[in-house]
Image 1 (cartoon, rainbow, N blue to C red):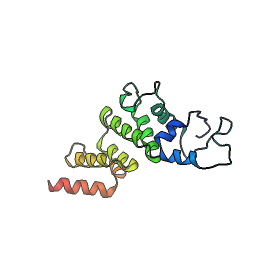
Image 2 (image 1 turned 30 degrees about the vertical axis):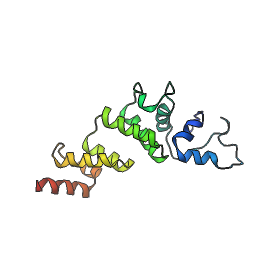
Image 3 (image 1 turned 90 degrees about the vertical axis):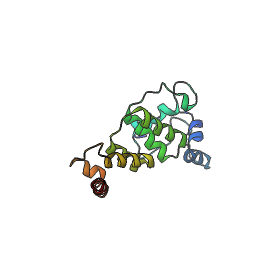
Image 4 (image 1 turned 60 degrees about the vertical axis):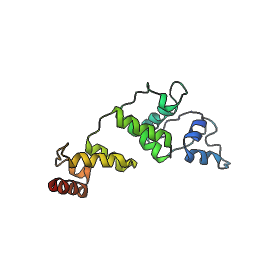
Amino acid sequence: VEETVFARPRGEFERSSEVFADMFRLPSGSPEGRDEEHPIILEGYKAEEFNCLLKVMYPTTNIDLHLVKELHLVKEEWISVLKLSTIWNMSQIREYAIHRLSTDLTMVPIEKIQLARAHKVSKWLEEGIVSLVNGDHRLTREDLPMLGYDTAALVLLIRDQL
């Protein structure tokens, strides 16, 4: 990933993601992924984001995700975990990231809506829009491009009708 080589056993990738499981099942004449001299190249991803995912996949002890209470990542790290787990269909890790972001960290309505759209989290989209309609967050000019003009207009229209 980028210029960084991450050496991890492939088993957890196979268990966590059908994308990786299918990739490892494909017959290949290439030595890619067999050792550190021939790493699997993942283009288009940031090493920092990948490292956040690895923190969740390989915590200090190998236990069930729901029991990993001591895993302290900041919001941006959890967002990276959500991003990559969504891309690679890692459903258990994705649900865990959504849970941690929803319960442990505070997000303003605009942020919820942006993340909902980017990572397909429908409950955050609903929560963010309801919060804006109820007036829990006053819209500013800076919010409009982040929210999207159509959504902002819809929120203001509904707000006016209440």
